[in-house]
Amino acid sequence: MTDQSLPATATGEAVLHGLDLSYFTGKVQAYLRYAEIPHRFAEMDTAALRRAAQMTGMAQMPAIELADGRWMTDSTAIIGWFDASGATTVPVTPTDPATAFLAALIEDYADEWLWRPALHYRWSYPMDAWHMGRRIAAEMLRDVPGPLWLRQWGIIARQRHRYLARDGVTPATRAHVESLYLRNLDWPEAILSRRPFLLGERPSLADFGYFASMFRHFGLDPTPSRILRDRAPSVFLWLARMWAARASRLSGPAPDQVPGDLDPILRDIGGAYLPYLADNARAHAAGLSTFDTVTEGVTYHLPPHPYRVWCLDQLQRRFEALPEAAAATVRARLEATGAWDPLWAVRHPRSGFDPLDRLPFLTPGTAWAER
Ligand SMILES: N[C@@H](CCC(=O)N[C@@H](CS)C(=O)NCC(=O)O)C(=O)O
Image (cartoon, rainbow, N blue to C red; front, side, top):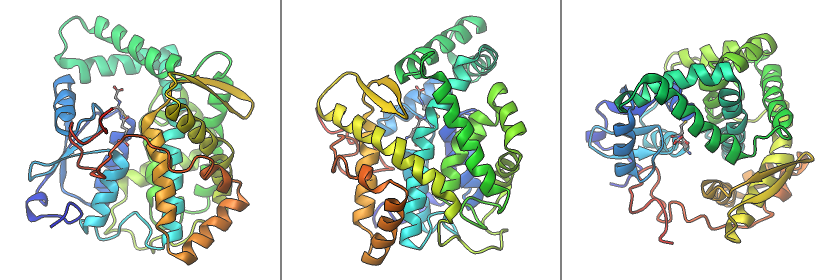
């Protein structure tokens, strides 16, 4: 038996450890609901986050504790594992390999590239920061001693430093950061006003990638949610549709192509996201502590992000594993949207993450290569 099969002892109720306002927790929660995988939600406090880090090597949420005692980390790997384990009747990974690659590429873009605007709207706007800071202080930080206002102040200061100052959000980049959000309302809006999910009649990896930021940040936080309701009512409807969707109750076929109206997204992947991943990989390889990367004429000053070095390598490996015909289909689509050359600008960068290919079953000893 390998980790890819679902042992009987893992088929009991899984525990999803996370927060009701967390980007990646919302993504996995929506997947578990859709895939009808028995689970219960456990709201993390700081002790639970430390425990997850002890079990997975990663101080992040969500983490899943299987009934057999194993722990899982990383939303993409968790979904991939459940999909492959046969735990769900209709996997969200498309069976057509070319479609699966493109859906995974869109998922990766949505996961990583919408993170900055999501964190910007939450922590730059005073009303949003006050409101979500209050919630985190009362929920996640409930086991931290001290008055609520102090915990609230502390979390706002920490998040602003970590996710604004250290992620290149400055007065000079702010309008560009917001334009990325607005474009990523307009593209899905045009699609979702025509069909229920991004690729067709059922949700796929692409939907779950977008769901992370859209549900738990843009659809929840005061400032971006007002914009979302006004500007993208079909996206608003899709959020509820995703949350309510159950694999056994939908009758449509699983998507087997990426329709042409996703090309604006693929073009942004080629024009902005992949060039950033390449700059990030170069900076990581050079051992820099910070680097500059230019996106659409706007300069971001950033620390290298090793996990995203791994993301780029994973995309390349995934492409190389495609059967010949699917590889040709994908290549043609990426060439047409300007995403082919940037995908290969840095070949197989070394990230040090998950060196033994254990995801989602990482442990403190296996998460990172020894440095
Ligand atoms: N690649 C991971 C990312 C998980 C992640 O970054 N989660 C955030 C919350 S949504 C987190 O735990 N951040 C930790 C922190 O802010 O200290 C995944 O897909 O699960």
